[in-house]
Length: 236
Image (cartoon, helix red, strand yellow):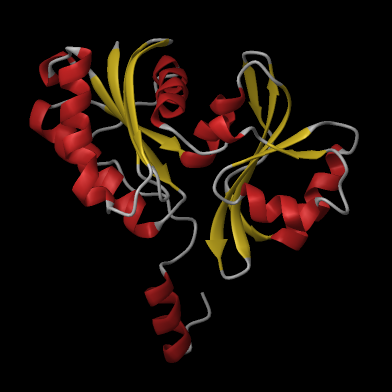
């Protein structure tokens, strides 16, 4: 199966065309331009350079969250539009899970972290053993202090920080957890090729969805909604 994978969950954006475990082509851009400006031209150029027609794509995968509220919305909306136009199945991938695929071939605990602001990170933990990935917890939003306590349970194992929150997390943890390391810069940020690899696993397990049912997974309410709730005295 040939799929188009998309990631716009943070500042960088990327798109990938893959067939099973073969990466046919990938574009990655990390500029100040918004994803709404860069994503569709990037996909068009990717298809042109890879000599793949949109009609050859059999499924669309996207990092559906967590991440930047605007970025996730753009990526999911693009995936829904592409899938609707061609009646293609969709694959919703956890942004945090896709990061674990950056570390394939390693032997470590991957601590995927994204800066959630408000003194929190989006996080999930995975054990990577060569080509095998085991999820250790669900996606969550938590404080760095709470994350520090959780990671103490993995003392003695190498813990690799991956994601746009890796550096701030490393600064917070380096004095208390000696086994924590930063992922090399070339695999530190989420990318669409890892989204594609995670998607193929989901496809093999029958976890396809439709463009209608594809939805963002934010983990938290948007800041504007949280502020409105606060003014209105809503506690949930």
